[in-house]
Length: 341
Image (cartoon, rainbow, N blue to C red; front, side):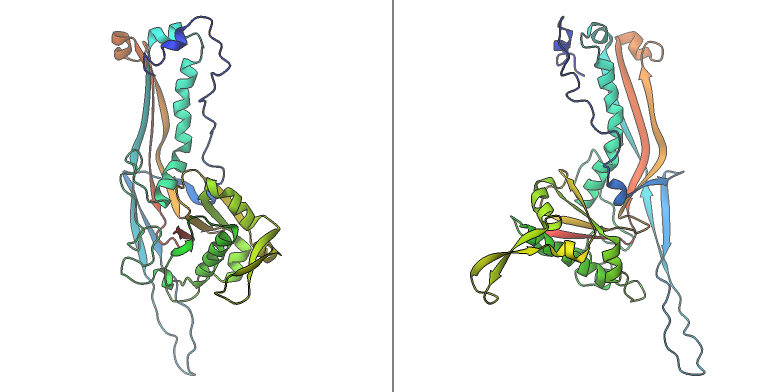
């Protein structure tokens, strides 16, 4: 808190009805974040090395008298580095003594609460592939050598054996309707069903996808269209005579998502800045993004009992530090991005 900016708090007879204007509203990560992000990994070093096996081989027919085909399977490894995450807030001791609101120190402590939304901030930095030097210095890549969302793996092959991999383009126009968004959701479902394991067999049967459900992440300003796409019982459908001819009317039809019994969890966020949709298949053991904790959040008070700086300068303060890292799944076949036009 700067001295000049806080001078108004010293005026005698202040009314304090608005003292909570910028009090933190968040006591933990986004309520649905655990559906799309692993939050509980621990770490005991400067970095963690992760390893996982690729698919076990599938059986095949043999002729009478032949032995079984002998196959092996490989594995992949990747590393997640831990970083220091810190915050300090200071204020003049005289300002605390003269503060008429009585809320200076309490408001300063709100800074510590903001560590609770750090996972949310980094999650969206990763999935939107955005640059923010206050968060991760670089967006991590997956163990297959590509970004979290990509059409090909690091070797240039179709990712997960499906053309377009887990990055679908050309599905969402500038001003999408509910129908556009429904089409994009079903395109995601179809793409999930095309994914192959590393032995070339189907990874997600379509019935399995429908039973599990999908979390859809999207920009908050699309909430009305998304609600129409997934929640509205009767929707508008344009009727044409022949494909390619001009429109001749609009009909009310039942919502195919509801009719199909598809389970959709909506996750709107102001941290998504375009019309892209992100679909995360529910029920997977691992999520597309994870957080690991090396050292839990620590706080310390800077006052006359603990700090020479305070005794010399009359400046008091609070300090916080958390140490940990963020990474992406080795093979993120549980997530698909549908690109905005």
